[in-house]
Image (cartoon, rainbow, N blue to C red; front, side):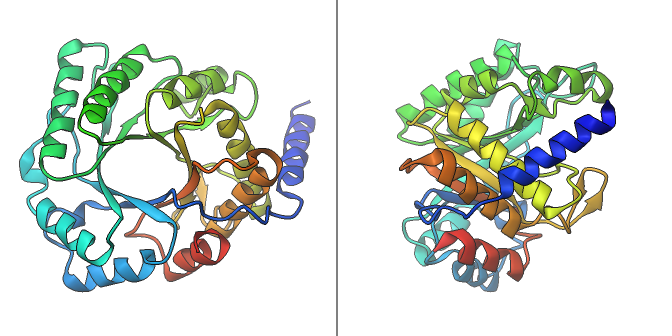
Amino acid sequence: MAVLAVLAATTALRLEYQGSPAAGGRTRGHDAVWLGHAWVDGRRTAADLEDLRRHVAGTGIHDLYVHAGPLEHDGSLDPALYPKAAAMIAGIHRVLPGVRVQAWLGDTIAHGGTPGLHLSEPAVRDRIRASAAQILDAGFQGVHLDLEPVADGDTGYLRTLDEVHALAAARGAPLSVAVPQIDPLPHLHAVAYLPFSHPKWWSQGYFGQVARRCDQIAVMAYDTAMPASSLFGGYIAQQTALALEATPPGTDLLIGLPGFHTEDMGHHGYAETVPAAVRGVRVALGRHGGGRQGVGVALYVDFHATESDWTAYREGWGT
């Protein structure tokens, strides 16, 4: 039975990947890229800024998620982590006018006795909200939260989003979140949690609850352990379709592209490629996306992405 189940799943993913990508499956100007901490601590140079301009200019990239954290486990943020933020933001606006610079803030969530953020505690949520205000005061134009791992149904996380979203909206800034994938099979998140003790998927319903509490939701659609690009592309098509169903029209949906090339049990760089991911998104949009405009892709991450990754984004989706 296990063999049959694997064969059925494999066949389904290959079928998801078949067909012609939608002619309209191109950038709608809602794309993003994650940028590493070197942009705010002084390590990046004028030459790096020119490389960024060369990669981003003329594409649909509208948001840069620049790592400015991490948060402390109590929810606070040390200003010493981003001493060059103001200069970086000014430089980016000079060479890429119209591009929005958001602060990427992350930390681990405490669960099962591990250290991290306790989002059920109001004091922790208060400090996260204060950290969001702090980063907006520093000149960032949005808040991008990447808190992991969040278990399906976590109400503390929902409260955190409500509070930070209210703050950001009052400041005229977006709240963006990086989130896990959606169950490819019903209730898989509950079954998978038992052996791995690390939330890998969310139910589609919980994904929708999160999506309604933010302005952008970026699916970390990589580290899938898929052994072939056709299976990975089919998986991306499936994830895009599920996310489109769950994301309200007022929230932008971004699908993460794997611009990194590690090899381990969870990620095979030869299979998880930018071309396969882009094609999967386009196939899904052809079947399910209609004329929806608030859809994009997000490249992870600038310090690992190769010229081939950037070219695949531009030629497959981004111009």
